[in-house]
Amino acid sequence: MSSSFDRYQKRRLISSYFSVVISIALVLFLLGIVGFLLLNAKKVTDFMKENVNVTVYLKDTAKDVEIKQLEKSLALADYVKTTDFVSKDDAAEAMKSEFGDDFMDLVGYNPLQNSIDVKLKADFLTNEKLEELTALAQEKSFVDEVKYDESLVELINSNVKKISFWVLLLSAIFTLIAVLLINSSIRLSVYSKRFTIKTMQMVGATKSFIRRPFVWKSIKLGILGAVVALIGLGFVVYYVDKMFPELALRQSLVLIGGLFLAVFLLGIIITWISTHFATQRFLNLKTDQLY
Image 1 (cartoon, rainbow, N blue to C red):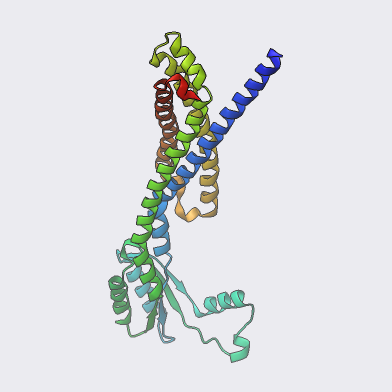
Image 2 (image 1 turned 90 degrees about the vertical axis):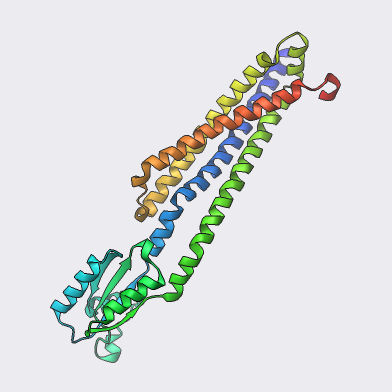
């Protein structure tokens, strides 16, 4: 009978530990995701900015040497990231592959123009710099017009600060939630041992002696939960790097390593502090208050 009860208690204890580890892992995983977003927020906004296309359309009378000189002068500008010459034939092929129909069969000729696609560096994607680029290009007599999505530029610039603010706010909220959830899980685990704590106290054990095994057990659970969270976070980083190579995550291995270390240490620190205060609470309770 006693053996059966011991097995039941052991299964119950393992189940309790398992739930604590899963709770810690899930919370730390979400916290790691928020930290990952925070670290890469600037990269994402820069990526969006540097993919805004400014198209310089050229007249059919433009000579090859004039086009090359203009492209070179634009490429050498300190605010330009890349330039790419697109011939009217290449533009027609791209349109054909996109829409599936050869529109030249309908009109009988290629109405498109040669053009130079210009992408600016992220810090220079402003209306002032775009107007400067437009004025510089239109000084050339062989340039027909300069086009870009003005509303998109305004939208990106106006929302960058808002996005940064909300990411920071979400980080603070998730950190608070992480502390509260892990603290609740640890307190429930300690609560199940409240009678053991009081019994040890009644036979003369000091508070630090009683607290020590609970703290070490929780730290081990915190480490295990952090490892599980980091494995999940590692898969997310790998997937994002594979899907969006433009973010160049491999160039930020130090920052990502720092994030992983922070998540690992956070799992230890939160469980340590939570267990300390949880055991202290039950140590200070009177025997009749345990019920």
